[in-house]
Image 1 (cartoon, rainbow, N blue to C red):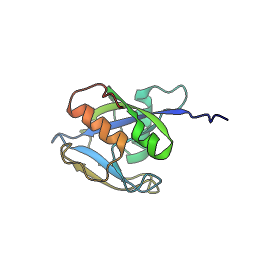
Image 2 (image 1 turned 120 degrees about the horizontal axis):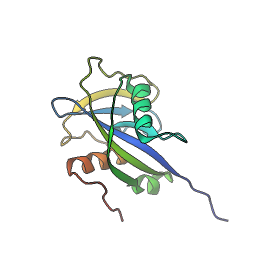
Image 3 (image 1 turned 30 degrees about the horizontal axis):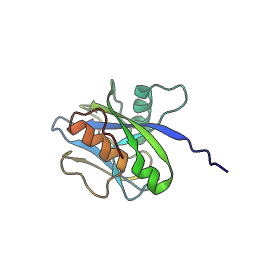
Image 4 (image 1 turned 45 degrees about the vertical axis):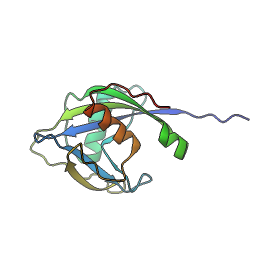
Length: 145
């Protein structure tokens, strides 16, 4: 008997500030204790941009505009470890707003911090690490084995 497995599509948004730092959150839900960029699953009929704008507002309470797609990540390590296959649309936006990001979903995130993309805290969530590596190396996709 074969098992039906769905592939979930999500967005991961690298939010940078004027200093070139990226915003990370430390997860406190089922993906604890991993650090990660912010994002979430794409709803049926939703554009990647609309998903990014919605998820960022829901998770950290800030309004972003014009997030842009820069890559795609096929997160196979998570599939091998958890049996959940996700494909992430990797997006970027620079945030120069006056409102400071804050945790809106305390059941999913326990802390926020701005960090250098070259000094990621550990442990780090696979999809987030993949997105940051693509962004730093100006690549659209890295083939996984």
